[in-house]
Image (cartoon, rainbow, N blue to C red):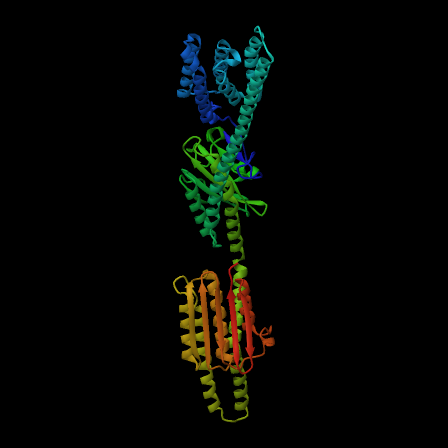
Length: 570
């Protein structure tokens, strides 16, 4: 049997999945329809029995054995029904029990004086049970039949008076009212029961949906934030192991260069390394065509799955950008192992998994572009730090050559040039060391900043200080870009600000972060802070934009400059 998921309807709603095959519903359980009214029935039965005994007490004093005998029968029956209450399960036997009670009590009333019988109140219980059992119409028919069976012989007696007619009418109305009240009570209780059942059914569906949504939430949380394809695939397989029980799992990705499906990860028997589309197992081709999970309970009937020894399978496509980037196959040796719940869960799993895989693949393709951009940034750093020094050395060499050509002595100038070359070599060495320095999983932002500031203080007369307030780390990529911004800002202070002191402040709680670099140098007007020809500032703005941070550079002449970079949670 193959079952195909359809993701268009709401979760848990009708039509969420269509299946081919037969199913077996729950057993038909018969419910006692008067069980809800049992306390009222028992109370009224006990009360009417007591009234019947009280009204029949004169017969005991007068020695009326006929009435006494009927009293024993009526009381005995009612006691029996109190001990063993009457059940009505909407079948012929139940109906006969209700009609039998009405008939027995009607005969008892008719045999002991009609409406003047001491047992007339016992009819109230019988009519009420009929109303609770079948509703208005049945109770009305029963009450009217009982009234006719009692009232007609009563009125046909010799010496009938107007009072007899009034008594007949009174009891007829009372029994009809009892029938109406019982039928109405049954209707109200039935509606309440239906509402309660509907509420329980909705609650059950909500519980199922809650369980599914929680699982999907766990899936979304667990899918890798990394854009490394290998890590994405490993994490995806890990989540499949957590969410499903299987004997074999295969994850295939589409190689667009030759339109083949390459097996990237598997768990269980080793599958073939790659497939052409027409070579895929039939259930995978069906999942690829319908773009919804497909469940197969008997793989032999479908021509087999990815692993030949498996019996049941669950298959799905990984859709992204209106295309399919991969396929997932979960298989088990047990027949009928997978259920509709597994299909629902897989249906919710494939979309975020596909997006993670697709993002990682596109990121891999864009790495070359990213490397070019980083090379451009390094070129800007070298230009801003070393380019001017090299240009100065070139001018000095030209000047010394001209001076020597004029026959003038150049020994002192060559000595000064040697010192300048040494200074530039030291500058190149420091620059390359700074470029190699980076934030890592082991070396956090405070350690990297402190090491850098110590080097700056050692090679210059600049006083440095690092203020920290750290309770958590940002993602590594964000910290690396912020470190480069801090490095650029401090280098600008060292080279151009003519400052005596620089203070770096770093605050991070794991969600938001603040980087602040303040100096007491010559400063500059705020309007000049973003000059496009300032490569260092352009690079800082690019790095801040790449991680969604804000960058503000403000300066006051002869007071100093402040660089503020802040990362806020999205």
